[in-house]
Length: 484
Image (tube, rainbow, N blue to C red):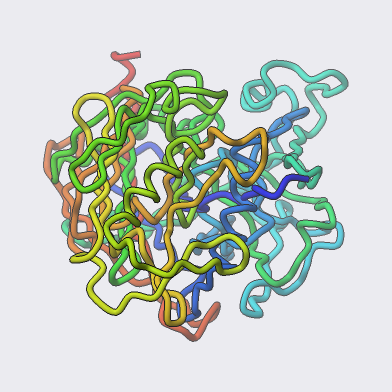
């Protein structure tokens, strides 16, 4: 078991839609799991370590499924499942693909979870609209890459989500109705529902049974054809595009599915044949001076390029980039007395404005796309010190020296747009407490989408919640049938 484990940025959202007679948008509101509590260095790093193991080790899919919702997730959503509908709190995860919730009869699953939440257990037999997905179903064939030996057409389609340290969660697939909100106009919504296939978790390994951080399940939003986005896109109901905007100042933000047209975003190509959202970095600037780095440091290794992961808290760089970068930053204040906190964080005392005393950092990408990180974003307070948010992935494990992951440290206060139809990603600096424009592909109209607070969150935590507004643009099947 390696040190650099990680549970995914959990940013994840649910998109479920029925065929409709016009373009509409759907909403799911997401809360911040650390809301109202101090995010210590240890908590942030522990979250990232649990997340990164999965990015690095990949996922074993002997009978289908990805994801591992066992550790602290940064964001969670409340969704309704079944007829009649019951509420479930699930982690939002852009790093995995399949949605699943714990089911009745789950082996040794905790009954209470995060902040004392009474966990819910889905029972397909209690839902008028729920049904089991069998091995003969096309989804079962797709998730397993074909027929599975010993899995006959009248058998339940099983999944097992395995983790790099040997932990796992397993169960079977079901199909049911999921409740969510529809956007009916600018910042207006109405309730609706749609049908999706998701996992019904029945067994968890010991590592996944901790009640401290447990929620009801996970909603994956990765790149594979088993994700909610891919399921909806393949049926012609949604464009394969989404965006998030994390408000680093006020908390919360926006997560939108569909064609974001306001503001305009410069895009760069995703690195092909990668499991995650990877992009090619071409240069690093510190205080408008380029670091003298070999081009090989940006492309070496199996995880080619930079992984964009809003579920990671900090930012991780290989030794070949981390060393020169930190050295250049600290050269602006040569008299600092550096301290090491928790044996891994570089910290120092500083009484002035960090934005005045330290340089901005600019990362350059293909197609003239850049990502600026200001000193107050990469330096954060810890007790009476400032600590450097950049982390050295090369010191974590000998086989991960080349890993580059950009998390909330650099993604906050930016609108990040993912266009999987064109295999591109982009971002722009933005006020994430404002609104964005989402185009209705049927009518051509643009709806305003803004950040909202999750109503009724007091049942999970009495503290003020930081939330995301998650939206989906629904399209008629005929809109895309001619393009396939």
